[in-house]
Length: 236
Ligand SMILES: N[C@@H](CCC(=O)N[C@@H](CS)C(=O)NCC(=O)O)C(=O)O
Image (cartoon, rainbow, N blue to C red):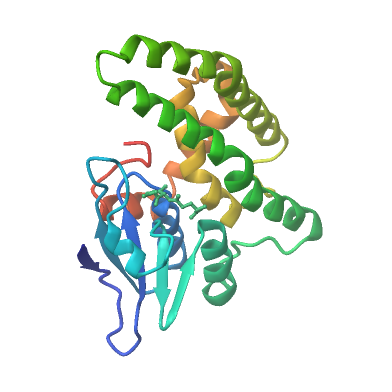
């Protein structure tokens, strides 16, 4: 693991430590920390050849997943919970959580929807794509046929359901929880970028989603977050 110190760290305050795994949901938390502009350090962790997180992460939290943060003695896992925790504790003045009831309703829904409904489909798509790449040549035709069947019957149609759903929601308002950017958008950021990438979504049929991703990428905090890890976008 390699640590990077954020330039804004005050040496008297133990900074938040983000365990950031490459190509992972940890980009969300980096984005949030930049939106909040609070001191933090990044501990960079690399996936192994098997694409899994290294076992050292299990010393931080028994599940061994990323993102995970340390805030003093507290270890906080689950990206949705980390976002909620950090915004409640450090984001009072940042307006990242809506104050009116209707927007807050959408905010809570999308914070849960992203990990509860959208990510499982995207992870499954990723697993099946990897399975095809890694299959030994003798069984490759069979593996490819199974993967295609799963894609045709289940993954493809479900991905389209999510694309249409989000496209519709983003036609009603600028951001997921109203006219103001919020933690729900940060939670959605990585997933929406993956959704667009893995579905090869064509711009003309996903105008609202494309506009949404573009607006997210244009935020100074998004740009700073990506710079910290040598990327331009979350889907690089
Ligand atoms: N629901 C968790 C999922 C965490 C998760 O599965 N993270 C992935 C990266 S996106 C991971 O650590 N994968 C490596 C592994 O499973 O070994 C969250 O939202 O934080």
